[in-house]
Length: 298
Image (cartoon, rainbow, N blue to C red; front, side, top):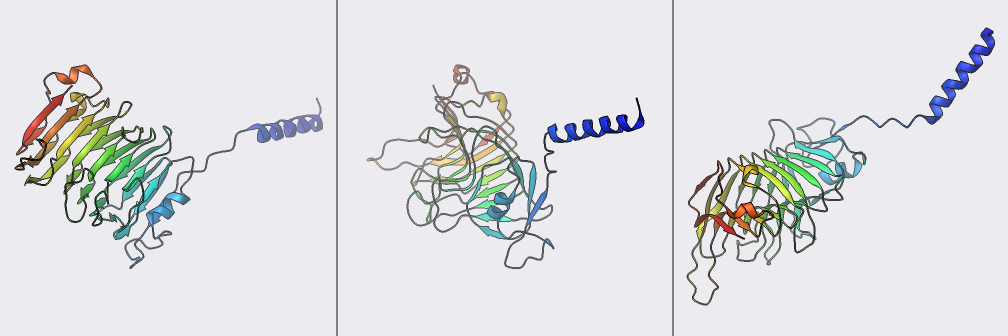
């Protein structure tokens, strides 16, 4: 075979391979967000809101949104796989706006079962407004999405003033009332100042691993029966997935003769998704100063 013929064949093969090869996925990027009030913590930051960075992130997933010190008053909806992380050594705060829109969560992870999000090293804070149901949750996971929630402070998730309405949950994964599910790993967070509950995993198809969190209710109150951790209505969090949490300060003083009796609990299993949950709850959790430390209602 002549050199000229070989050259033509090689050129043809390269051309075919170039046309038929799938496009290469862009490399994951870091999108940096800095508070518009000063913009000095992270020089060269491209974004001034978290929502704008989420919108710009690769829809195929994999990007890191790095959030610098500052106050970010916004509701953030994440519907693509990414990491949302506070910058090392800094304490950026995502604050509930004065008027919340449904689902009234400060950060919502949603979209589909293909969405997997990491939320790390943020302060996520209320309070909500002056009406009942002003702020429903700090973080919400729904539509089959998955979240890994680590090293966050989730605080003051309540109406203003703190009230008896059944909203105000630090982290909610799935919801029977909205017919939606979620999955989460919830590790090493601090949850405090919630109105109704610290962590709730709800509805058949929802599941979670809940470890090493500090969940603190408001203490003795006549206003509302709080639950530190709630697993309910078919959700799956076996005791092996609920370990080494410190859950305190959930205590309801129900002194009204006209009010249906209720109890605050450290851990509540209510119609959870496995019959074995009705047995002893053997976990490494520290449960103190709760009206009922563990309640299991088949």
